[in-house]
Length: 380
Length: 126
Image (cartoon, rainbow over all chains, first blue to last red):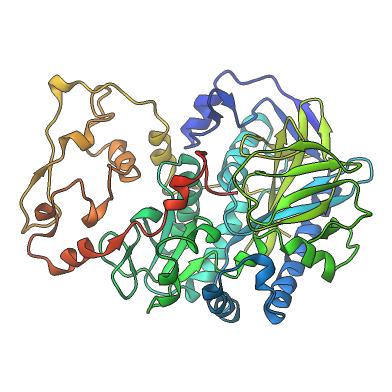
């Protein structure tokens, strides 16, 4: 795995904007990298594919374990949501996607899971569409990329369609975030191509008519994809309406994903699969032997409130507003490092199968919402 | 194995829509501004909504029926869209339609507050 440079396309911003990618630059700083890229080998792509599928299977085992042993307190799940979570698990409510974040050590070739973005993963449009167009611009047709996200989304929606409630699948996200709107509209696009009737509604505009959730036309919401965190929804005004909903709307991602998007799942996985080659040792309480580690809030977003320790001395920390619910302690991983920064691999599982990757690069070894997106190809 | 990339990708919905969202704001030419009236039911009265459409509707030949409409569809106008759009007078939305009146009466805003109170960021995802 290595970085290669390209002669920059002077029209790169216009080229990206023309395909509907409007947030390639934030506050004047490029978020999308057009003039360098990662080149990986076929073996490395196979390794990521295999690890992603295996970890997904392990995560499902971990959800079963948490439910069976009623470990909700470790996840700070509100009591009123427990039945909803269990029902969504037992009913096998539809789930469409998730993204594992991996550290890759180029020397040992070890691939380690940092966390699983199971509820509201973003950068799907960049991974599935923008880097595909980027490859076609810079490389000949035969050059490959670990990226079948687009066709996997359409196939997954096609398979889920018979199990969706109601005639319409609503799609929702917060207002005034072009990044989330783009991700949601991309997902909606693929659902339309799978023959599903869809409607967009902002999360703030969802209504409650005293019996069920309704859209802006007063139409009942029976199936809804939301790019909005469960841990926020269950603390907002409509929280109890989720469980009082007479129509028992299907939320995608389903509420059982609250267990996987919570970093409390990391020590659970380590307990269930100790010394698994793709896991980092993780604990609820820091053991004395752990000298090099990362302290992460169980509920946090975009690398906020993370502290990194080397030989028990804090070497990096990020700001934020999380941590109230507690922390986990995870063995420090070796991140891939180039002159341009530290990189992690985002690996997507869609419809139960690994199907694409992205690279995010940061100046420091903690990935945040400011981390750059780097496209990739598979070496010939 | 789902490892290798597709040879063709087709998008049916979003490319032109999102490309138009990403356009820089244009100065509106108030002198030539087209006045816009809307109603959401044939039994309702019209309400003038020109101000809601002023952004990006001046120069550049972007009139109604262009991608501007798509842009507006994804942009909230100080309230909501659809029948519950509070930038459109209730009388212009509901008319004599009981179902639409019911949509207006639904309680809204019960989700989304955490995003507002959270540190400003480009995404609420992860």
